[in-house]
Image (cartoon, rainbow, N blue to C red; front, top):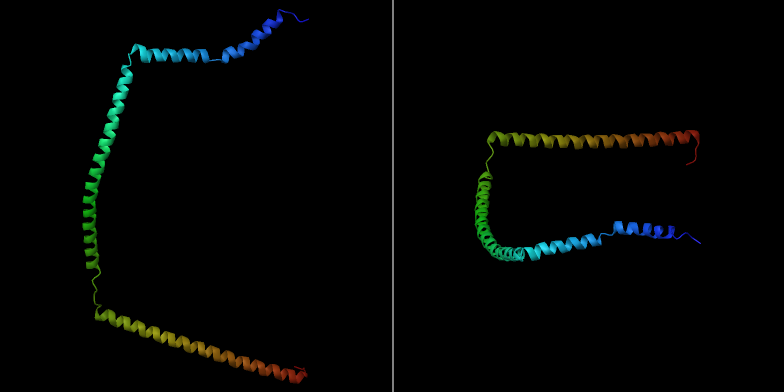
Length: 158
């Protein structure tokens, strides 16, 4: 049979963590104290002030939003006209900058000389290609003849 003195001690030790970690009593007391401070002692004056501030902010929000929209519309239309005017000026400046200028006679002569040199270069290049191609064909024919002579001399059947 267990000792009766130990059993109540074990139940008390079992309840200790629950009592230590149970903050409900403290939290309930704090809530009641806060409500008493907020509602009873101040006679709801704070709540009334909060409602007044909320109403003021709400009316300002709608009033300011309408004023901001009107001001924005007016200012944006002014900005639109100014930007369009600036764009027209930029386009006029670009049109002035794109004026076609006639090349000087010296520049035109230099261009013609370059074109002639280029045409001569391309002609010479084409002539060189043809010479190389012709010499290649001649060498192929010579090699083919030498090969056929060698086949005849060695009596190799084709």
